[in-house]
Amino acid sequence: MEVIVVVVIIGVLAAIIAPRLLGRVGQSRSAVAQSNASSLATAMKSYMFDCGAPEGGATVNILWERPGNVEEGKWKGPYVENVDALKDPWGREFQLRIPPEFNADFDIVSLGADGQPGGEGENADVVNGKRSQ
Image (tube, rainbow, N blue to C red; front, side, top):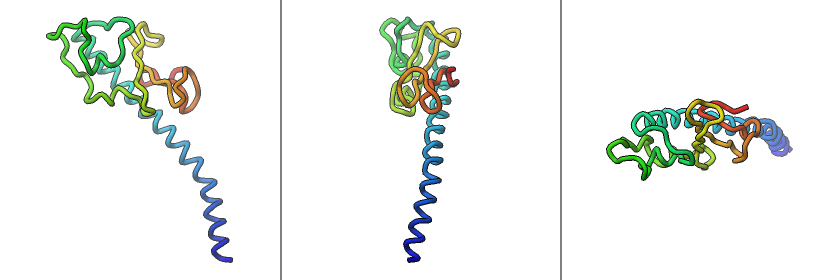
């Protein structure tokens, strides 16, 4: 009888605590995406200082590999520590948007957990370290 009571108590506690912990995982991934987008924006500014503005249609890969249209002497990269720095916490590559929607020169964008534009909570887009509205 005591074992059944203990099992029921553990089950109730797990049912109450588990959803709260899972929500925290989503929040932490969103915070990491915000931080990483800001870091990539800083790296992109360094790239632009060295090489000029990237062409429309460029991807964040220009921070890791020299684009063919940039002279070898101008490119001082790679501008990120490794190729994984170009991915958001959900494993998708950050997007480089030129022309930008939110900033003056460019946007670095993660589409959140669902990979779709818009959304709320963990699914909200992150743009240069800020959640888009």
